[in-house]
Length: 283
Length: 349
Image 1: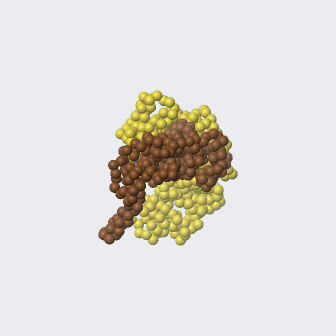
Image 2: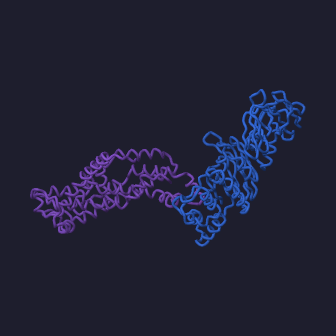
Image 3: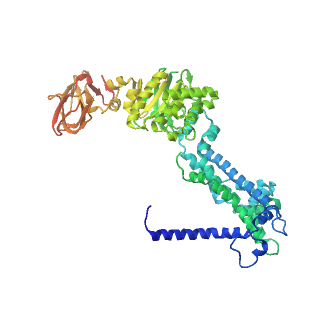
């Protein structure tokens, strides 16, 4: 749309700038807080400009014990835990839903649609709803305080299965027939034809699922009791409650900043594929 | 190279039978065209030969093997699809090589075969491109190339030209014909386009509603159509039909006009005469009230109705003719180009 109305242009810019400020200001405060020492952070008024203690705080946060006076794990270990959890969830979900969508679309077996709807119904059962029985199962299997316990209960995904089903349905039947005449068996067809064709969708889903996994809070809180299995998202909350002393804002904010980084890297790094995967329809 | 034999072939989906007792023996190296209107079962028949549809009953033989229960890959066939079905994420080379790779053919052998096929089809310059970077005609060639490199016993074509524009279709038609003759591979080609069928096929199988109406050489179908359906389907523009009563070798039209024929049949019948066999004759039995002209250059089509009646009729005259609309013209047709069909639609000789 091409319009020549200066007032409208000005208005829309003002609204957009306001929106950016609204979103960016808390992040700026987080960054500023992470650059001062703990004494400055408890004095009023709060600083609005960066201080000089950024690298000092970074070092203390990453490799120190984090907050003084607590027994939490160093933040680098939490980052690693979160990363492992997010990656396992993302890859696990993608692998399982690719295979189940493949089965539902390309194979004829009894109760095929029944299975599809059963998978679909689990959309109504997120982990928060089934948290007690799921915890019971995980505990009985001895998976508490392990990566398996953190990820396996979250790994089945109705959304992703449904999405891949839709993707596979857009692949023309002739593609399968052509591959059959070429002599490709089902798994060969899956790996040689279907996977490359769903490449962009897989990437888009990976971005969404990685962030979903990274942001898990309630579930890790339940299944991890040992400090060296804590994830970064749950630790931020714990830091606020730590001890009776006033919160060490510089360390907490640095932790928050570090917690934000991996999702940002994933989103920016995969932006192009992400957009393609959600918009491209041509097969 | 192989013969193909279809014996008492039946296909049903649930309770509906879509192919009824199809019989056919195709010679080695023959180009067979299966033609018919949409929904007549022609694609189903082809897909049964390919192994993409199961056989309800009957037998399909390629060479001396019964292939009813063989996987498509084990039937030694290659198929060209209507939408080409090229793998969009592979280069042209990989598209053509994929089937050979699966068959574990050595790399240099694959390269040689693909390049040879590419030379035949003149697509050597595009080998590294992706299908979406090619035009329709080029994609068509790649699809054919994929069939050629396999060096199969049988080629199957499922309306391969229907996505191309008219000019390219005529050109590719000739190329397919030349290629098939050169390679000498037995081929089955499905189309709904009777011109394509007439130009390509050594023999044509006309299907209608799952039944084989006629199976024979193109000229035979044109000169001696076995049924009203074949008579109306083959030839463009279509044959004209009139209800007549036949007695002692003379067919009487509803208008009272009489046309002579060599038949000994008597009773009610349908008389058919092709537009191109009608010649102007002021005293001829067929009087046409001219309604519209189509001047195509090489010939002129005269559309109209029989004088005083509602039966539509078309006559084709050679060259450019200038005829006034709403005049009445007389036409005649020689008795050897008059076709008679009985009330069940079967040809009367």
